[in-house]
Length: 223
Image (cartoon, rainbow, N blue to C red; front, side, top):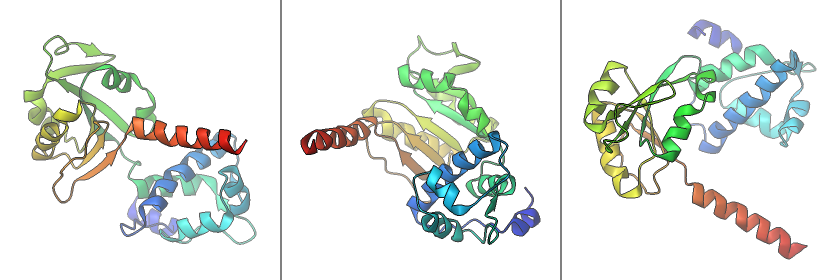
């Protein structure tokens, strides 16, 4: 979407928006895409919010960080709002992505076909184990870690997924940052020290299971 078209749609990027609001944008985009699949062209804020188990006020407040959306008495136009949210999130273009760590989790991610639908193109994987190097996982080749800088620069990669053991997380992150990667999805169970200007999103699967166990245990106690 061109900048002028985005302006007409009423949306702008806002780097000062709270992190929980930005996370909910992805939720809103998924909900809108589901409506589009159902051939629904317009939806009220209340109807849309209920489908996401939120309130209309919450949805309107979140979207207000990025512009004015919807028409009074009509609601949101699904197609244009999808385009605008994709632009705000940066997924209206294709991002080349690499995966570092070709173990079980890394290979599972390399086989996942949903990334391409959202604008993320996996271009290469890396590992230090010689038995994993030069093989292909699906269509993705696994390279030696020493080739990372060359491949990242060749494909202008800005995003990476890290699935290495905790003890290797920081060294791999240092290599990625030195090569010019600006965003890291971190599955390594460790905190990373990153330079200014680099974004990291941690994915701690064990912590998520702990949260689930807390909720399930609490439900049992209440029952």
